[in-house]
Image (cartoon, rainbow, N blue to C red; front, side):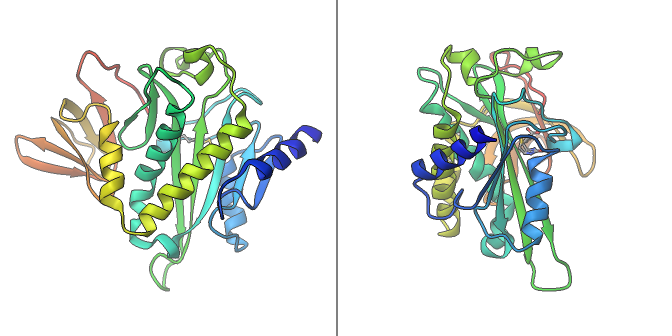
Length: 276
Ligand code: BTN
């Protein structure tokens, strides 16, 4: 408990944000920070409220997958976002967050460069180092976008080994650089980048964020295989980038396809095929 209080105090003293991380709960253990943040949001918590946990018993990923991290080694946290504030740009949020995470990470992993696999897997040295799960709870019947979103971020920091399949697909800052990272400082830097990019989105600077995303997007202009969640179809085409809704644009023999929810498999042999 003492450690957690010290973490909160250090975070508060290092934070350079106005809103993100200013209201914080740092817990020893929780089922999922996303679940807890959603419950907190329902009580009326505002944009930027943060829940961090040193261990998640049931950390969740996209498509009902799990997210695992050894206790006290990594960063697993969730941020509350007021949906009425970001409105129709909500769909773009996961893309913007991936940029913030990858750009911050790049300051910690030189000479390596993080990349993003659509929509928001953060990749380092060909393996997944971070993931983002954005979940929304919008109230129906009222003004559209009334309600909240929870943006959950998992980033492998000091974990030295991964078990099972993860040993083949996952990595951490420590595994790549051999250096241990101060999680509180990293979290403070991440919150600063997240707040800045969130402000870019609120200010309508989506094109600028798309440019940043595409500059580190893995497989851009390459041939990829993709599957679509809505119709279960798989197809192949050239990855053209993302649009202002966060959807993936792929040129296929049938024309340009807009993929809102799905998964991409990179065909370029220089890139690994990574599950989400
Ligand atoms: C993915 O790549 O599939 C998304 C992983 C998201 C994991 C984070 S860890 C903090 C937050 N709480 C959760 O239960 N999941 C997200």
